[in-house]
Image 1 (tube, rainbow, N blue to C red):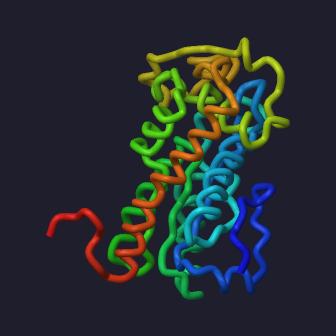
Image 2 (image 1 turned 135 degrees about the horizontal axis):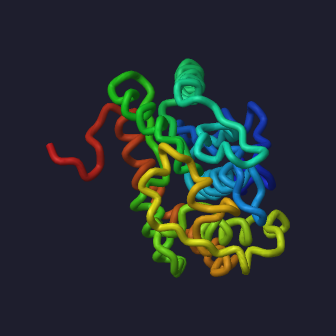
Length: 254
């Protein structure tokens, strides 16, 4: 079989024969969102990013790539036109159904590649999978994003660069520059005190929908972020494979 390449778009192009021939038994499910990302990035930004991360991983590791989930938990963005949300129980149920279907077809692990920070329920989905058949993991974690940002030279902290900022703009400038609208160089907006965001949503903290510094985004930073995430995924994959084999998790204490 030919060496896998990242898909040209968000949808994988595998045939059933390609899927069966892949050496790995772990599937990747990108989970994005359909929510506002300011005036310079598309509503599908989180889905594009999750798909890009998963596609690069699938090109470098023995995994099976699934198409992305585009709708998720975006209630904090409801004040902006175009945002569409699922309830947390619905997203949890969809992921659980996909996991059951994969397990029935012989897949031995599932990694949720999450592109939206508001999908808190995905942590519960993975937590509940422990010891219940199909091993699951959530990637990237905060440590993975932190290492990737440091490797790429991202200047804005993760807290300050919450939404449509330097990190997300950099990834899209690298993977899909045609999706980045003019104006990002003057769209910076910081709102570090967001203590009531879960209650109030984002609107009290930003008029544009941006919280971060997109002006600092570059394609080079985006490329280095993806390179780092591909590297750090190896540890996540090793843990899921060890769990699926019923063996000891690498690095775990006895």
